[in-house]
Image (cartoon, rainbow over all chains, first blue to last red; front, side, top):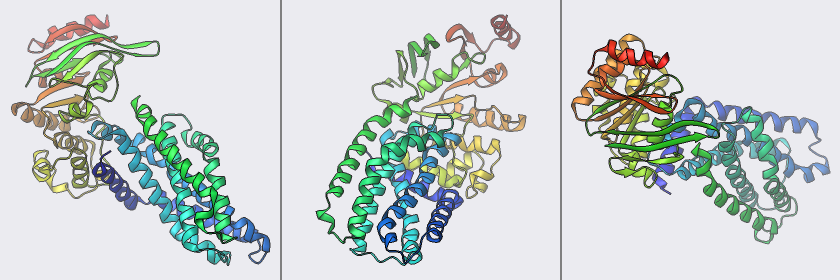
Length: 224
Length: 227
């Protein structure tokens, strides 16, 4: 692993995205419309909203994130620049790590806008610590982008790859999705302290296992 | 400089390369000729470390590409019909980015001048013509000053003027002692840039070529292959 190479690829991706803003605009629009739809579909003063809100929020973030994930490797593949990266003397895992960081930054950028928007639209009052809720979300995001980035590389040569990605990724992400929702509910509704939530440990373990597996298998994905 | 011994590559039941051996000397310009499906691109992808061979060995400047692919990559520059450039970045940004990946601090201004793009250095590559992208692709391949240039059908899709510009640029590099390995469909291109080569067909080397011989004679070998 070479941090300079990882940083160079991440910086390049961010610069290219900020020039075109194709993915970012799409993700912002999707999250905004989804939150707005949920807002109209529910009564912001209903007591049941308090229970389902963390699930809503995570649902919006996951599907917004899917839009970014499918582009991460696909664009490099379509333009042929992925071969340019493979021709350079950098390890294949560094390409994966850079894509994971880039996808995470994309998701965090969206969430930095969508999370306050959610609070305002739903007039939602978080019972626990906001910082702890954000930590849970970030952990969930890390699990999501590790699995998602790896799988987007795996399906990049497949036909109907964007559809295939969703079909493959969602079942694999189910553990992290469910555990994050439970942990988020415990923080946002029941104000439980982060360190006492067992699901957090499970999310961390899931992230660690997936990170190791992705690193080990990624070389074979890029091989042929 | 490039030594290929008994190289075989199979994709399931299809044998793309079947016992190919060749040797390119330092400073030599060597052509791989052959019709579509002859195995040229597969061979170049193996030499560029993008594909692993099924069997056989490849050494680049004495380095076995399977044992030390990273070191081998430092010794080659690849120019393909795909320029491997980012349209959303400028020429300068593209070269700086690749420079970081090669851990080198190249003379980017001098390189851009060499490929006659110094005036467009700050323009997005997406606004470049195909010929300009190919010239910039040469600058990208030269960033780390590799002794070997692998040219995989580099002029496909270029008009005649851009092709001539491209040849001129390659001739300059040749005079600086770079070793070339060129794949092409065009005999005149091979003759323009190379002195020796091989003719591939169905994954095998069918003939060794002296490209200093008259074109009609060489065309005859090609025609015999098609017949």
